[in-house]
Length: 234
Image 1 (spheres, one colour):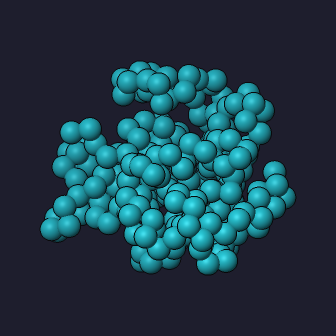
Image 2: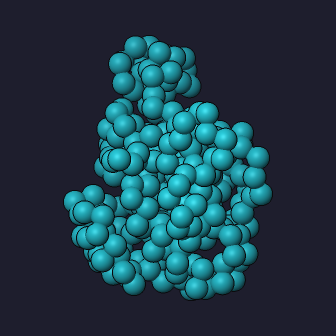
């Protein structure tokens, strides 16, 4: 899969992926479409829900009231069009070339935000049956890109999804919580600080369930790194 991923990334035509205008030899989008993307410019430092640019606390009310089992979240975009159309394409072979560009956007965001780097990077896992059906895990592709460019170790098989669950996208928030109970396990080394990588955080149910598992395994600090964050319906 790694060689396929690289081949697709190096053989894309040089037209804007959204409007089809000609672009520079390395550009994925034209300048106009790039500017129009739903960049997440001001957000809660913990959960990445969007905040007003005038908010000086940088932490949302929900995280102050009930802190989640992770320490910070870095997201590049709001999960709105056209990002909401691009990311689902990652799950299909024809859309794999989108992953390198999205992962590079996340890399640039991380490099421009002062932080303590984690000891290891872990992708959000999918169940083996889903991996067989799809052929790859999009979170692993993103995590591998970040690991290679940041020179941070990548842990691939220590965090596993043992329960074959329904797709979270079709469930309510309450159903999502029930759906993922006891779905993950960690059998890796005791590491003080990790970054958990995924494509999208919606309600946060998946990352919260995983982080509870990682906390129980003794991991002290957990940062969430994602491409996009779904805004609160409120």
